[in-house]
Amino acid sequence: MATSLSPNTADSVAEAARPKPISLAQDIWRRFKRHRLALIGMVILIVIVVGVIIGPWLWTVPINEIDFGSRLKPPSAAHPFGTDDLGQDLLARMLYGGRISMAVGIAAMLIAIVVGTIVGSIAGMSRGIVDTALMWMTDLFLSLPQLPLLLLIIYLFRDSLKKIVGPEVGVFVMVVVVIGGFRWMPVARLVRAQFLSLREKEFVEAARALGASRTRQVARHILPNALGPVIVAGTIDVAAAIIAESTLSFLGLGFPPDIPTWGRMLFDAKDYLDIAPYWALFPGMLIFLTVLSINYIGDGLRDALDPRRVLG
Amino acid sequence: MTLSGTYVLRRVLIALPSLLGISLVLFTVLALAPGDPFGDIVSNPNIPAEVAANLRKKFGMDDPVMVRYFRWLLAMLQGDWGFSFASRINVDTLILQRLPTTLLVVGSSQILALLIALPVGVYAATRPYSLFDQIANTLTFVGFSLPTFFTGLMLILVFSIQLDWLPFVYRADIASTGWHFYWDHLKQTIMPVTVLALFQAASWTRYVRSAALDVVKLDYVTTARSKGLKESVVVLKHVVRNAMIPVVTLVALQVPAIFGGAIVTEQIFRVPGIGSLLISAILANDTPVIMAVTFVFSCLVISFNLLADILYAWLDPRIALS
Image 1 (cartoon, each protein chain N blue to C red):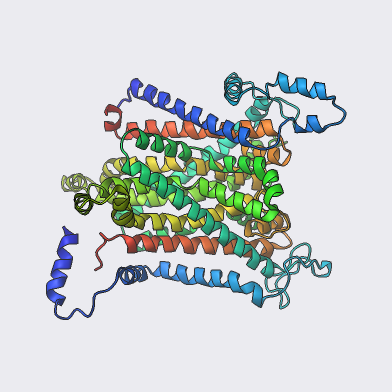
Image 2 (cartoon, rainbow over the protein chains, first blue to last red):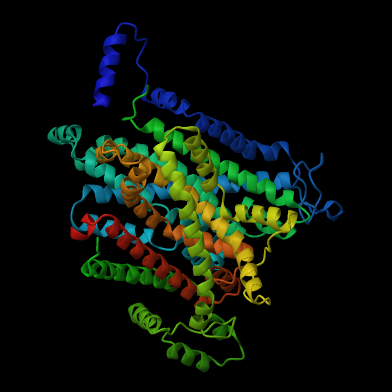
């Protein structure tokens, strides 16, 4: 009721004075801006992302310069975030680790939403046995114990992948594929639910009546309308993937020890909590701030992308 | 109000194929993995080639995949879970030693999480957009954005190192006796349980709030109020029960994450449960233990999901009838 009424009343009042039509992107941005915490989260995230991208060029201290003369030093002018047990500069290591966390988060999210969208679309468009089988598979994946399986797969495949593509790329590909491979299920369910309702809508029926092929119906009419919740889920998946990668590194089973990731730094720091608490605090706070910002952005996008929500 | 036995039986029968599916996934992962559990034996020059070949034959390594899968499944079902290379005892004995600790920590943290999430979520939903609601909302965001390993380290930093109130290493063999024994046990359980509970409570509070918010607006709640029922009765007897229905579904989806959090927590506080067993087995290349623990985690997830299904039908009797 409210959705159909308010634009009409607004029309009649503002018909003459309406400046110019606003685009979809502008409208989403206008809605997003109203979520104050999402806006703050976005600013913080931009600062962190820009920091880890251009930071290593500005702060040129090497990440692996061992200096036993200045080991476990608290923050100072020479080392703004202090040093670790080998005297390595924590700021440089955190900037480098940030690049890995962000890259893992985004790549795993892309895998999750691509796989999820494909599975969800196929299930949503086909009825009967295909739909049932795909949903059974989705439910099965949802009830898998993810972290134990993640650890199992990494344990079994780590060495052979390292041999094929080298330690860094190998671990990166594996971590991304495995994390993404365990996060597509919610997206698949969302997409399927959207498809089930959208494919019965009048505009899709109209397209069908005009002779649009199935592919065209999906690509032009159904999928674009189903993307809103997928974007929200994808945003939150980035945060979840960053946590998953940090968890693996924290357990000592992620990237090799010489590659500083945020989780790995916490893993190394946990035995020095009494003498060097800052060593654990800084990377931990950075993970927390990044994840919190992304979660708030997701919340803001959820409000902004819901067309049924009427702005007051 | 009573739950029909047929419904429970049906749910159990539906859970069995999922368990089979999971065992298939586990076995596929193991079978696809490069490397050979007998690789050490084959490459060991002290073991003659024919002995190695005989060993392979004895364990059926050269049989077709399907045959190996059914033999493995049959062995798992019979409780023959193999022998731990690292601990030199049977895997099932090892796991049975460790399982109660994990269940104790996970169980009490879930109860604590529920005790936080239920009142906070319902109270926030009855006063939407109030100051309380906004503070609770902010705290839930903070709560599920804090990774469990970071919360754990922070608790150790504050309560073990700064204040020196709580021990940060969990010990299964406490020397003290009498009530001291229970007190020491309680003290060392506080931090692991809190870490897990805070993380779960944060997301559950959100679920409870949004579910209760939907129910509060319904007509039957207004009817209950206009009958002159006390607000507490309206909330406790009319709102909470129906608000719990969607919450149970969402909580069931979170069960794998709960056990994931348990692994991390056990590792931080060195709780001797199956989670820390998994990590040490991975570090020691102890394949039979790794497979068995992963399988036990799968069984736990399935049985908790089953519990959620049954709870769901108890909360919403229409489910059992359809």
